[in-house]
Amino acid sequence: MSSPSKRREMDVMKLMMSDYNVETINDGLNEFNVEFYGPKESLYEGGVWKIRVELPDAYPYKSPSIRFVNKIFHPNVDETSGSVCLDVINQSWSPMFDLLNIFEVFLPQLLLYPNPSDPLNGDAASLMMKDKKQYDQKVKEFCECYAKKENIRKAAADEDSDDDVTDETKSSDDEIAGHADP
Image (cartoon, rainbow, N blue to C red):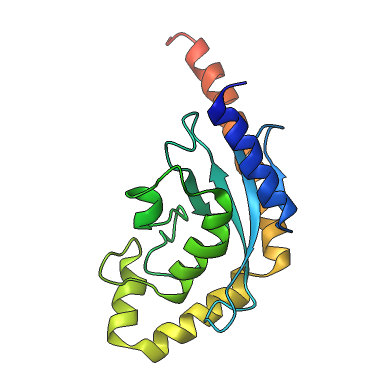
């Protein structure tokens, strides 16, 4: 077993042993979901998100891909894809970091200290800079609507149905592509 693969196993196991709910995808350790709770004393307190983690083959030498599955209103999280804009993950990643750092330090810091000057969600960044009270209210509304335990289950069901739609689309495209024009 190669060193990166041992490290991958160790980091995922460490995350599981730290009381995080980790759900593997396709029975492997390259892709999985983690239940993440909003940090205490933040606008996101009480919210729960499903975070999709994808580990590249070169992990820990290459950073993982991290995204929110259920919606969150935050300047540094893309509202559509859930991708995260976080320098420590995207630019200054080091093999010294592990998955536990992401969930115990990096993501809580992101939610506690949003950076509207480097946004992935321009609407959130603009609202935060122009009207903090309205921004705070919108964050709380998103938490109430999208960041509950039942939303995690719904997000999982939606992902499954997206896969079904993709499969149906592929099969109908194959049928169309198989017919000659008259």
